[in-house]
Length: 203
Image 1 (cartoon, rainbow, N blue to C red):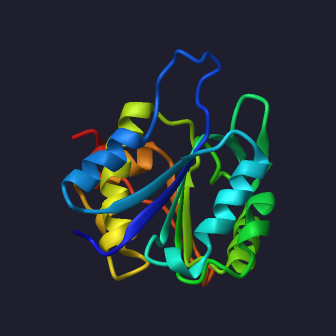
Image 2 (image 1 turned 135 degrees about the vertical axis):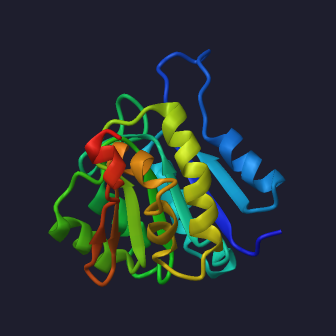
Image 3 (image 1 turned 90 degrees about the vertical axis):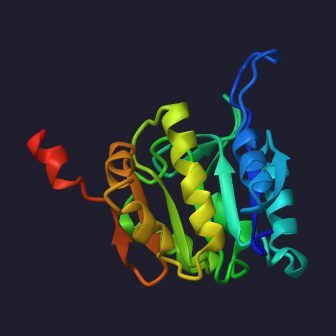
């Protein structure tokens, strides 16, 4: 079993109580493959989100070094429900100075379509090593396939830029680029995948 783990907070995707949709199957698959361990919590309000983030930041959960935020989004903002949202700096407050070396993934449409300066402010406040996510609206199935690989490498790579190395490869770059995937590092570097030459030429 992998020594590392994922801490996931998931918003409420649907207005109707009888609708189903969750990232749990992805987490369960990776756990069954012995690639990760995980903790999963549902959140519907900003207070719930702050509570669970505060708990995650405790030293006893240091091995769960990947934070996975699964919820609707827009540039710089996460939607917990159709009525409750938080912006990234609201999210940074309960994590201020408590995310040293942690890696954060926003599985939310368009959240990373945000200025470099504001993302750097978020990273400096939290101390996280990196943050990644999407600059576009994404398809559920495509993003689920993508994040299966992304979470594996974020948990198991010894390098903070492990996702960049894996997802910039010929096999994954086209999908990563089509999703508008973006990474920002604490040192100020930003990365986006480049489409393979064949994708540009149509060959």
